[in-house]
Length: 276
Image (cartoon, rainbow, N blue to C red; front, side):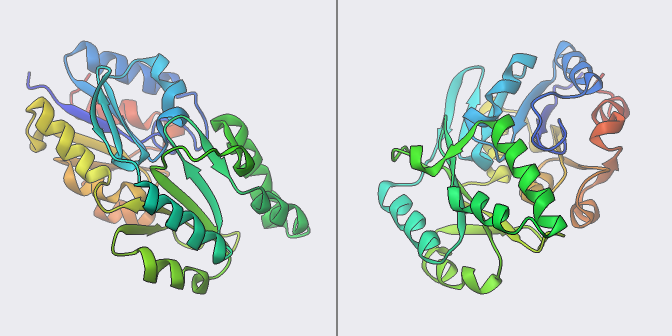
């Protein structure tokens, strides 16, 4: 049997968003696939520190920070944080534009305290109240700490939220030549959210880098994702699969759609592709 290289997004794919506990069916699928000689790698926008609680379940490697940090069997394959000049410029321009920032370092993640204060001040809106609860849960589960505790560690990625697209005009002018603005659709809470990712990498380049390192042809790679920040990974892999709970836009691009994460989607897809 030809060895397959399998890439798994985490939030919304391996686990429910913000959770560190995969369904038992997903863990069984991963265990059996690896026992059959296939390689299973986490490929996530999460930083190393945010995804590390999942390593206890057994994976062959990881690509964190949307491809900015790659390990395989404990060996460092790729490491590309922002330069000190870039990170100072990025943090300053987003702050000056009134945009809420979450900075992701290798082992620590920090968020603007003012974002939570903003949500607390606007909890009369049912949507903002729900979003506040979601953010508090996310910060607790993923170990996100206040920006006041940030001490200048190298930054791999910045997650941003703002009210108006106009707030992104100046950051785009100053940063878009070096960074991709991966913007999710304005959600039901009326807040624009997205990720600032170095143009030197993305989840698609992570697929290429690791498949090249392992000498596994791209046509023998399979990628699972659920949102548009998985786009490059889904497009690059030999087979790109979107979860049933995923973005409608990604479903149109993926080669196929499997059942949702909460309905044994990974196990069903692993069976379909004879990985287990």
